Length: 239
Image (cartoon, rainbow, N blue to C red):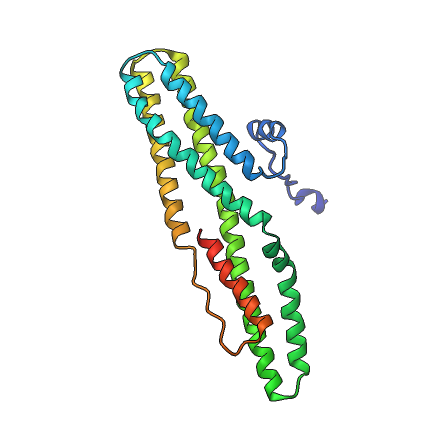
C-alpha cells in the first residue's frame, strides 16, 4: 500500500553522551553557598596552595610558583569583600521588606490616580508614584549587582580550585622537565585569568553606584523618608 511506501522515518530525541550522563549522575543539587562558606573555601584553597608551593623541592618550577604566593592573600581578601556584600544585602531587613512592598505601593497609587479627579491630588499622587518607581529601579539594580556578585564568587573559587589541582599534579610528578613546565604554564595562565577577573570585578563595582536624586523640599515627611531609603540603596550598590 502507498501508506507503507511513504512512511517517514521515526525521529527520536538525541540521547545524552556517556560523559554528560556520568557528570549529571555525579553532581548533586545543593542550595547556593552562604557568604560565610565562600570565605571559608577561599581560606582553605589559600592554605592548601601555600602548603603545596612551600613543600615542593627546590628547582626552576618551585621558583616560578613562588610568585603565586604573593597573590594568594589578595584573592582571599577579594572573596571576603564580596562575601561581605552578600551578607549585608541578604541580612538587610529594610531592603528585603521594600523588595516585597514597593510593587504593591506602586499598584495602589496607580489605582488611586485613575480614580482621582482633583488636579492637585493627582499632582501629589504622581510625585509619590514617581518616587516609588525610582526606588523600585534602585532595588532592581541592587538585586542585579548581588546576583553578579554571587556569580563572581563562584568564578573566583573555581579559578582557585583549578590552580590548586594543577599544583597537585605538579607535586605528584616531582620533576622539572618539559611536562612539568607545561603544567606550570597552565598555572601561570590560570593565575593571570584570576587576576584579570578580580580587576574587572573592581571596575564593574566601581561603576555600579548611581547617584540617587535628593528629595524635593516640598515632598511630605513620609515621601522624604522613602527617598532617603533610595539614597541608601544607591550607596549599597557601590560599596
